[in-house]
Image (cartoon, rainbow, N blue to C red):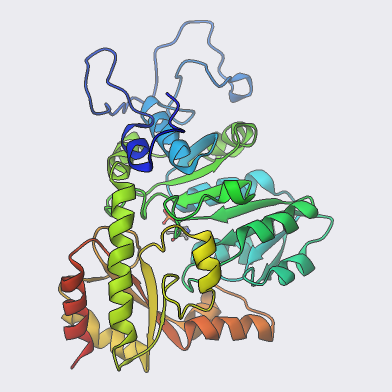
Length: 400
Ligand SMILES: *Cc1c(COP(=O)(O)O)cnc(C)c1O
């Protein structure tokens, strides 16, 4: 079925699914089988695998995983998707697919910590050269690309700063240099931005976050053209083996059915919580793409149809405030991760992060970091509880 003419909510519910042909079951079955009975002429190597071959072995493909891939592709308006056991599983498979020894990649100087750490030593250890730039400044990307650049990697908004990158501008720069553009769109989600339409070649999601939405299943995905994803599936998805459990795929599909409506509530709640925090005397700074005070508010309005549910704020002596507030919170959980129906708060200390995860070389990079992060930042993933209850919980924890 072609979903192009349907609304997002209909796509989220129906894409990839149909009543089961055998039983009439309306909800998708979970196919947990790792292997499938085949005829005796079936080939054994992934080298001879074709897209429409019968199911053979779940690491190669599985009916439940396939349903999730179709649903994700329909929502992102991508030709194809490949799912993985986690967001990091998706990112590592994609990077190892696109890069080899002798290649050069330009990556956002601030990105998801594990991704950034992967580019600190693992990729250079394989002979891949990395240049880190603040991709919010398109001119720095243009300065960094070279004839051997194969890949430009961005996040918008980036974790944890919520700094934005102009996707269309950076896509032009990457393509002008003969490189591919990868974007991790976990924070924006398909409800806000469709990066493929803006020129990105690959979109990555941690399904663990908004797409699952309930904090009970890890998962990841890479989306892009059929021509790009068929070799990715063969080369690194199947061979590196970061396969998603069909049970998790089923949980993620179930979560995705309400994804567009959840994103509207995440945004409404985040807007209200952001305004409350901006007016609180103890809060020195609030960063949220939906606030006119965001340094890139114009770009946010141009590039995001939904401002999503993550904001950051600063307080004097953040580490001590975090220790004081964490045990007082009742609605908000003091925990990592984001995009769940529950509100989640976590404090990230600036100097610690600069030592462990990010290597910011230039004064311009450090200046941009401090503009967004100050000494440290509280990352708040605003959940789907009643906004009044989230605000009341934060108020009682903030006030002595
Ligand atoms: C959480 C996250 C990841 C990693 O996803 P996992 O599912 O935890 O492996 C990658 N990118 C961003 C932006 C994230 O927030």
